[in-house]
Image (cartoon, rainbow, N blue to C red; front, side, top):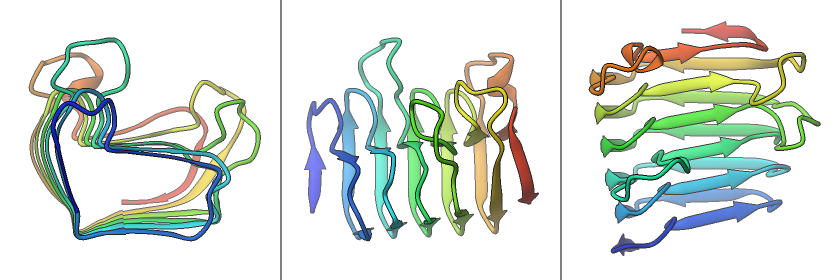
Length: 168
């Protein structure tokens, strides 16, 4: 599939099961490319091309992949992500209400170029007490992350509160 044009988000997925998002082109979205929200048992996002994500300046998220993830397994692999107005991949490892924590997240083999903030941003969302764990970040190519020079944007990979059992 090719998603091109001024969609708010090309894909918005909420409380669904066993997804495979493979071989799509997602470009020129106003906000996120893909937004995932809670209780998605297993999801694979692989071999997609994201380009020019977040073309409308706004406080809303403008990430290629934006998640509040509380599923069993999330695999984000072998994608090409270029030109994001915020983060390329943001994984908040809990549901939006801070209940339910992530099972396993693998972010591997992605090529990420030119993000305003971080290429990969991992946290427990708004919750400062919920622990999220079992993350693997490996074999990614990251170039020109943090192009706006913001404090958090200066990290190619930004890990913050609540994250345990992480392998980089």
